[in-house]
Amino acid sequence: MGKIIFYEDKNFQGRSYECSSDCSDLHSYFNRCNSIRVENGNWMLYEHPNYTGHQYFLRRGEYPDFQQWLGFNDSIRSCRIIPLQRGPYRIRIYQKEGFKGESMEFVDDCSSVYESFNYHDIYSCNVFDGNWIFYEQPNFRGQQYHLGPGEYRRCIDWGASNPRVGSFRHVRESY
Image (tube, rainbow, N blue to C red; front, side):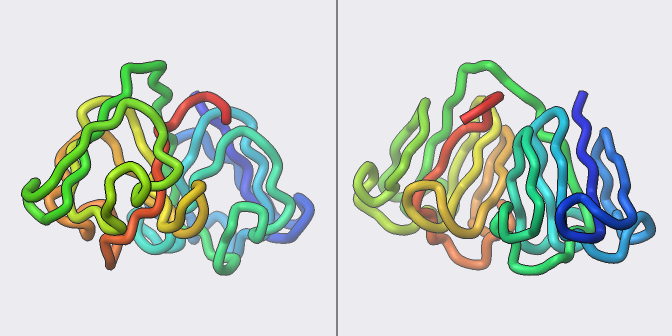
């Protein structure tokens, strides 16, 4: 069970909305989001309704302004709780679309895709176990994408417009 509180103003001020489950459209609850308190769970936030647009992974903690969660602006319009899994974790990444080309399997975090895989881009992947976060840059920085168990034949399947993945890690209780 998760719990997240959205605030319209910075430093947990202004109108607020408390949420404990997935919500595909938060627009009717608040106009903007400038601070967040995550009391329980791991959450993926989305810039637009229906789980689209920029994605932001947040775990338990306080985020007094949108820069704290690396937000591009104060727009949060949908959210999902990410189920916690204690393991195993397993993902296979591919050099080309449709699970073709060079591939490599991982069971733990990867801080530099290029150093481990010798490619800057991941065009497809299979998530066998666990939930994973792809980051556009090495060392878990930049644009974020949540991938749950399943097949991702193209980068657009995980919400990316380009295949650049610099690092990734599995979702766990704390980092």
